[in-house]
Image (tube, rainbow, N blue to C red):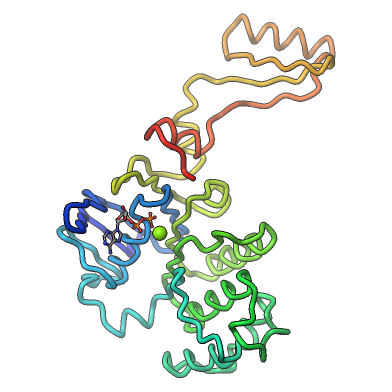
Length: 282
Ligand SMILES: Nc1ncnc2c1ncn2[C@@H]1O[C@H](COP(=O)(O)OP(=O)(O)O)[C@@H](O)[C@H]1O
Ligand SMILES: [Mg+2]
């Protein structure tokens, strides 16, 4: 499996403050990796270190085989970055913003129209970027980051503050990009987003990875005591455990047609995070 990013024992101090401590994580080619943690966990710092915008205090970070402290134009041509600091020129039209980047990146401007159509911004092509809604601006920034068809796309909380329907459009686009071969490193504090999108997630707390794996595998790892929640015909609820006594009760209730709904109570990423760290993700 090709590793596009390797971080080994990354530590980052800001004065007295330790933002990252012994952080190790890889991005495999073709995957969407989610970096999940509450505000202040060190997500943005990690992206900045990988993309050479900040230097670590110690440890090694490599992106596409190159030390992240020495990345040059040949690497920048192969990565796209979407962060909150958008750098969009508000007076320029949507198209002109993209045309400017196309010339900097020396890519054909003819790809712009197709990408605008793909994110639903064709009608806003000639509109000043400053007049876009938050969701439209986020889609513009995303198009700018993928103009040059990068091998790795970095997204720092790409749907934070967006309405559910715009967030879903962005999720769909990211899954399409993945199917076309782009590898994605994204940060989020939204566990539903992570569960829906990511092949693997790393749970980050106070600068350390406290759990790592496929979302489902992580949740099942913590499903030590299997439980089921039932809604009965009389609208009362009942939680049963996976033991002989309760399973017999469950069977009796099902046979006597008293069960309206039945759900297993396996943990979510949110509850795993809470269990491991003692704090929530929000
Ligand atoms: N330039 C900086 N100077 C001092 N402290 C910083 C700086 N950037 C980040 N930090 C601190 O490092 C920690 C991690 O921040 P950050 O990576 O932005 O977290 P996240 O993106 O997960 O919310 C926080 O405690 C934050 O206050
Ligand atoms: Mg951040």
